[in-house]
Structures are given as C-alpha cells and as structure tokens.
Length: 139
Image 1 (tube, rainbow, N blue to C red):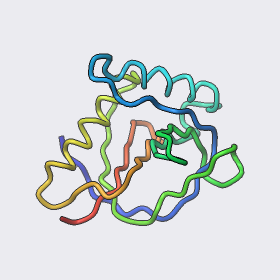
Image 2 (cartoon, rainbow, N blue to C red; image 1 turned 180 degrees about the vertical axis):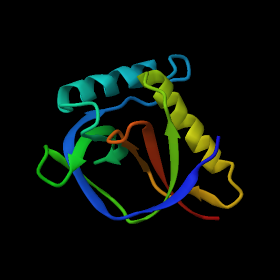
Image 3 (cartoon, helix red, strand yellow; image 1 turned 120 degrees about the vertical axis):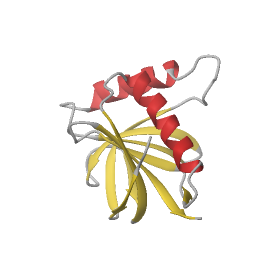
C-alpha cells in the first residue's frame, strides 16, 4: 500500500455528527461501520456530495457527515492547512472502507519520513473512488 503526500488548504465543513464507539477488536469494524452508514444515509442527498470527518469533537469521538461551508448543519469542523497522506481505494462496502482506513494509518506510522500529525481524518466521498486524507508531519 502506498500513499501520495499532498497539500490541502484550510477548509470549513459543516453537517451532522454522530458518536462513534471505541474500536472493539472482538467486533471489528462492524459497529462503527453501521453507525457511519446510517449517518451517511440520513445526511447525504447523493453518494458524492459530502465528506466524512473522523474527529474528537468536544471530547467525544465523532463521525461528522458534512459539506464544504459553514451553513450545512449543526456542527462545523475546520480542516487545517498542511501536508496530508492521501490514500485511494475502489472499495464500496463500508466495513472494507473502515478496514482500509486502519491500514492507511498503519502505513503512515511505518513510514521512515512522516508521522501522523492530527486527531482527525477526512474521508472525501466527492470523488469516484474512496479517498482518505490523514494529516502528517515530517519525522
């Protein structure tokens, strides 16, 4: 698995959020994936008009289904300007996507040149393939 290092500009997203339980290795990604799927189904008008943001918001691990801009829901989140590891997959099934996200973090943490630099990630579902951006910094 490889990734591309890209520069993202600061951007504000807003939408609807749900709490995500802590990962339970006994259950795998199933519970988290079901919660994300339900949140997406409730918020998104089409399969490509939103992003998902995994972040700690107000001390709660959260999944924010959002659109670009500040007026799309009850919760806003700012993606900071900086370097991001960009991973792309053609997976469509949510559990497979969440597994891909976990593998992506493992890839960044094993890198000789960069490390994770934030407590959030951006799932960009506006593109044809699933794209995840993880904030990084040089080691």
